[in-house]
Length: 312
Length: 117
Image 1 (tube, rainbow over the protein chains, first blue to last red):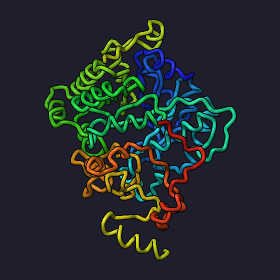
Image 2: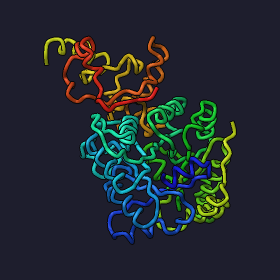
Image 3: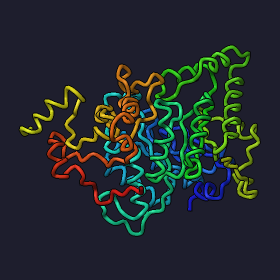
Image 4: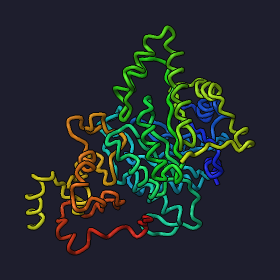
């Protein structure tokens, strides 16, 4: 059983983080990216060509993480591979003992720096989950057997703030029916959509059927906030938040404050089982945030059995 | 294209923007063709839908799933929007979904495709 699955099953508070993209530099480059926050996280996401920019593959990075003693969550998007290639990646990951798999649709190729590329989308995220779940049950999509069946722990993402917002909990439920056991939410800078998503998730039982982890993003400057607001698909940032950071005497400190406030509020929302943390720089921001919020280290959480309460 | 497929295309292209996938799911998606989604998503909207409800890829186009979710409750097949739809069979492009419907060819899923209720 993966460490993430164990933490979720035991009802402990879960912390995951997103590894900065890797292009070169060997294992050292991978290690230096998670070393600052190593002690806080249960697992680290190896991303799959984020925002449609090519990087070292999620399978390669996930293997590197494992070699370095960190538990990976391998992301797979539907944009760049057909179903055969996706199944091959999953089988390959399981061969290396990588169990956590996060299935996404993926940003379109036009969001990236090679917009002339062919988009694939042979499967969608839900069909990918069904496929991975079939593999977990010992067969490929074709029905051909896999013996022994690979151990897999499946997850997905959801964006509570993207239209049609009322339909998002329903779509998340579809992902759970397809096999997802955890959901890492899209980055949010506005609590209102998260609060209504979580209220519905608790009411419908979604929050009990999978571990929902809101994502908190650490940025260092108001211009980075503006960039994300304008250029990153699926993320919109309230103008007040950007203005607040711009008008502060120390805008970098204010950006950090904003993230801390969001993280603190998000983890208090009923049904939330943990946090997914994202930073776009190689620095200690994630560890500082955990420290600031008094989130115990992973070892402390495992010892104390620290539980997040699901209020129904 | 065979004669019936040609007639189907002539009827459905102007009305629904039919792409002739040969495995029509229009009635279960609020009479909105999901093959007009640039990502051809058949199980709901991606996370990139713009705040105004338009498409991540084509900012001038309303997200087909925003439309589907709005329209589905007004159809007799309202509940079918919750179905988990199987992957597209890429061998059926350009064939008539009417014929594939009557021969049940469009119901054929990969052997390993299983969805719990």
